[in-house]
Each structure stands twice: as C-alpha cells, then as structure tokens.
Image (cartoon, rainbow, N blue to C red; front, side):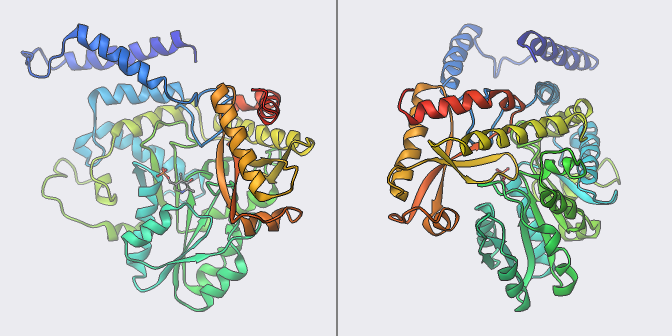
Length: 461
Ligand SMILES: *Cc1c(COP(=O)(O)O)cnc(C)c1O
C-alpha cells in the first residue's frame, strides 16, 4: 500500500472514531496531561530519528530474523480500535472486539481442522499461548513429564521451570525433527503425560512428524500439543498439490487436526503487529481448568467471557480488531489471501537454496522445508572454525554496507558433522547464516540476494 493510501485510511480511522465520540456530547477538557505542541514536534523528530536505528524489516534485502511490518490493513484496524482501547478480558471491556476475537478464533480453529466447539482465544504472544497449553496439560496429568525435542523453542524449558514440571528433552535427527525412536522409548517408560511437537522449528523451519505421533495418543495415554507459532499458517497449503511443500510436510500439517491443542502466532506469519498469539484446544471441556472467580469483572452478560478461559487478564481488543479486519481482506485460503503470500516466500526460499547449491562460494546447511534457509560460506580449509568466522564476516559486511541483512544461528559440531561429514571438527560449534524469507517480495529479489551474498563473501560490499 502506498503512503498516500495508508494516510487516507488512517485519517478515515481517526474520523470514524472521533465522530462516534461526538455522540456522547461535549465535556470540559482537563489541562492535566496537556502537552506543548512545539515541544512535541521537536521531541517526535528525535523519536523518529531514533527509530531509524532499526534494520529495514520491510525490505527484501532484510533476510534475517522472523520479522516484517504488519499489513497496512492491520495497522488501520489496530489504530481505529486503539483510539477506543478496548480490553478483551471481559465482555464489558470491549463487546465488539470480544465478538471479533471469537470470530477470528473460529477461523483459525477451522484452518487447523478443529471442530466448531474448539476452545481458544488470542494471547499477547506465542510464549503465553504455549504456557496455557502446558499448564492445562500439567493440570490434567500433574505427575507426568512433558516431552519436547531439543529443537523446540527455548521457552519450553523455561515454562517447565515455571510450572515446576519436568521437561524431558528428546534428541532430534539430522533434519532437525524429533527422533521417533527416542520419543517412543520415553513414552514406553510411562512417565510422559504430554508431547510437545513443533510445526516448523524456529531455527531450521523443520516439521516434527506429527502424523506419526498422533496414533500414540491413545496407545500411551498422552496429550499432544503442537507449537505452530511460526509454521501454523502453512496449514492453508496442506491440501494444495501445487503448493511448494513436500507431501510429507503436508501430511504432518494435516495431522494437527487430531492433536489436543495448537498454538499459532498471528504476529509472525499472520501479518499482525506484535501482541498477537493464539491458543486453541480441540476439547472445550478443558475450560474447567481455567475456572476462577474475579470480583471485579463480568457483570454485563451471562455469555462466556474470554477472560474466563484465559491466563492473562488485560489483553488488547485492538489486536483482535486488527486481525479481524485483516482476515476480512486477506482470507485464510490457499488460492487467494494468505495462500499466495505464503507460497511466494516458500518459492523464494527454494529459489535461493537452488542458487546457493550451484555456487562454489556457499553451501546449503539443510534443505529448507518451509521458508527458513540455513547456509554457510564454503570454507577453503574445510574446518568448522573457518565456517564460523566466514559466516560472521558475511553477516558483518552485509550489515555495515546496508545492502544485506541476515541472521546467524549456532550449530553444534555433532550435528554439523553428521550433515556435512567432509568437514573437520575443530570447534564445539559454529555459526552459520540463516534467512527467513517470509515476505512475498523476496521471490523477485532472489537473484539480488544471491549477488549480494557473493559480494559480501568476496569482501566487495
Ligand atoms: C516464536 C516462537 C515461539 C515464541 O513465540 P513469541 O510470540 O515470540 O512469544 C514459540 N515457539 C515457536 C516455534 C516459535 O517460532
């Protein structure tokens, strides 16, 4: 969206809310909190200047972390609701945005193939959404451990500490997926109550073999929680034979429908500003675990209050409003809306991987499954320590020339040498390069990204 269009829509948002405010009649303004316009202008300039210290997350030359600006529609939706500032904790804190939250939660549940009665709500982040999932799991099986892979998001270990629940770390294979043989061995010992699988790991974008674990739910009496904070939206492409996804990846995305709970982050692939995660439970009866009695809230309705089924108290109604408006304009579909956006990123990722494969300057670390690519500069000496230095050098040169913005990831030597056995292990770990190609604009920029990578590797940038 062009700046002029965005400004027009932002103006319309302000006008719409101001005109609603006028219905309630004039009232004397208070001088408390008033600010000097002149000073504000100057201070804002300083603020805007400080913000220029950011990396250009919007630009396809930014191919680093899982970061991009929200869709302009989300910004307009957020701003309009923020002018009112509803709180989706209780219905009387924001009736319209609470309704919208229920609607978007149903849309997300149906994206995963969860039934209509599935219970869920938005959260302020994926971490909080996962906290709710493992808290419910712990309450339902208080004496049993929670199994996660060593590639699971680092917050799971912390959540285990917080809940004083044992986290059993299951090793991953060379593709970054949880090892089924190790997991089943742990399940056979009967001490695991819940398995957390990751639908797209944050490091490599690897899909855990969800479909192969689902049959173990009944056999071992476990709950299966899927952390799809990053990868959940790819479920939209699980039925599309044309989608740039492996059939195996699609099979595991499908299997989320049979799991007990799933977390997805609309603030990652859902085009939303930060502050928007989501937890979904297939069986709504887990709502009983949330039961609490607050003397302050819930007085306008007998209907279900989102605050009754959520761990957090205050939550931005604007986050629900922004997501609602976004999903109206950009539907959760394979052939339009989200599908083409996600596919473009997948093709960009495969395109860049193919370019790197044919190059003698770089090597792909792991074939990409979603839109995360890991790679490293080919070391003349075949030593891990040289890969580490080379990666850091490419990263630094890209950043300092402002032509290429990447991220790095540390990989242990065992994993490195199992994937690339020709390399010499002379260090315990090595940094490699990592690019999340999550903007559709990345697709047309693959050749430029590649050229700038070579430029940085040769020290020309
Ligand atoms: C990002 C991420 C999280 C954490 O979510 P936040 O929204 O950053 O709190 C958890 N799990 C996975 C797989 C993630 O990618």
